[in-house]
Image (cartoon, rainbow, N blue to C red; front, side):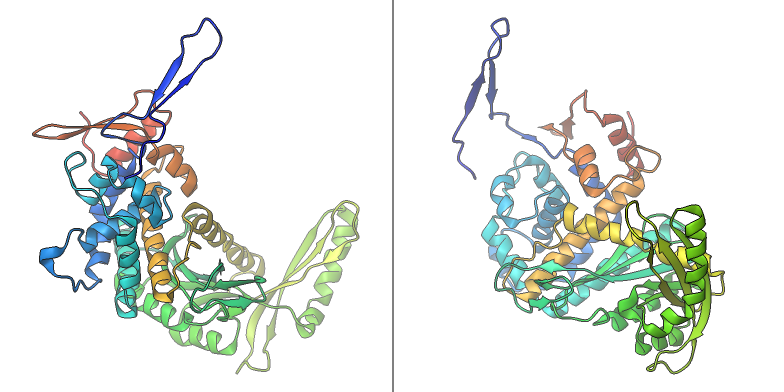
Length: 457
């Protein structure tokens, strides 16, 4: 436990005001009082329980001080509360709310695992256990939404997108990637969007070498997701939406064979640009007349040399006008098997922007790129822990429907609902959490607590 170097501070203001003394001496208090909501959600989803069951434990039971489940919960809840590193364990080992989240008595329970113990824990997982954990995470997410939607959905959209994970040391399988201009790993992230909902839900994250092409590992991931979704939502149309890195013949043939709807971005080339020429001319004329950016939609049947047959390609012919600059032609192309109007299909493709927002949350809100272990599988384990924390936070945001936190980002959710001062009191019959009466988001917190199972009164 950290040594108290400055037990008391005194601040003096203007003469008429008494000196203000600050002491770090409040026992049984925490700044993460809202973490109780995450524990309630985890109890519903049994997420950490199921993930811990995937990990083998070869230790002597007589000498075990910290169960696998406790250490996994410690890391997942710590990540959700903003503590990205295992180093934070030294300061949080005796935090009553973190002990309560793990399942220990907040006052008399044993201290949580130390940083060296957590480091050994992260480096002990092997590829088979991590594979089981990945699919357990996906199964939990699918089961959660199957229960929420009562097994019925009008359509489910699968988004796949690679992202970068910059490395700054001697991490295994970290390579230089010219697209990102850095040494990195390249995780592949998959999300599910149900019906016409705005938010896509994280379902899988796979860490890959830094020089991996976009499609590396995507075939197996997609096929397994499709199989599980068809079992959970029989008869529901499935749609796949990806960017131009997936536009090869092998990928398109796979989508055709799986009999799914697809919308795939297509990189520009001289043949496609020639076919877009007439539409660009039309857009240029409209732009010249209006003085604004204009776009015109069209379509063509097209087959690249590697394709076995022609496919429907939609064209967005756009002429961009910015103040003080010459107009610029910006044609965009999408290959699809949807029969809707070109403008409608392109709007569906543009909804991938929500996937980009999820990636930003994972990076900036939960430090997905904090993969500083030297071993590749340890870093994959960290990625899965981050994914588990994000699944809990997305479930929390879902329960905040109808409040000011319904569309809040992860960092805002943490600030409003998790980072609440609390004093913990225990009696023989119950544990009482004393939260500030003037908490700015106290009303929202109470509504979310009721939504996750709390009983008023």
